[in-house]
Length: 187
Ligand code: S6P
Ligand code: ZN
Image (cartoon, rainbow, N blue to C red; front, side, top):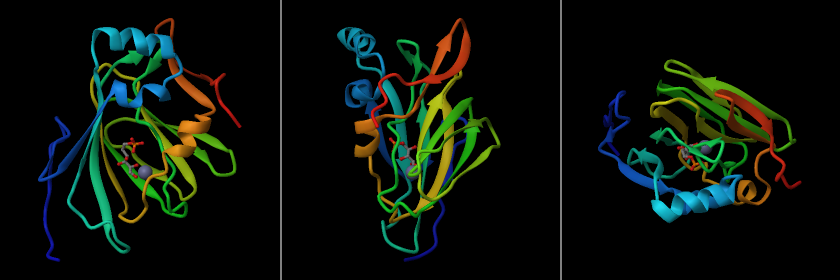
């Protein structure tokens, strides 16, 4: 394999050449707290919640996967749009998120059940240690755009988060961004 460049557009989040995955509400609906609010939106439209654009790197040991993520602004009920969230299949692998644009929160939970939340704004490089699951949330009015670097063979385990959820929700209350307990958390 030969060295290569990709080009990252800090304004749009485009990564070229890259492979794009679109996540619409219909595909991530069950992750949101307020299912009635999600259904009401889906009666009218199926909004694009986020996109991930991957550089073409082999998913093999020694390589570094990298991509951009673009989360659109919006809410389902009181809850801000977010990514599904995952543990890495290979639990002992870390990741870095470098924020390019917008205003976000990074919600993390370790396999020991400890949780943490970090602010994301242009210039923050968030370190996700091994054994911590991670979800990003757009709490601003514009797109939240960040660049990710991770061991290319890390893999995704979405099932655990789908099953138990996160201990916290990030919601808007009286115009304020609030981190509140998730009453639907299962554990
Ligand atoms: C991969 C990395 C990101 C996310 C992306 C979307 O390890 O953490 O590329 O895949 O931000 O989030 P999710 O939870 O839908 O994969
Ligand atoms: Zn990850």
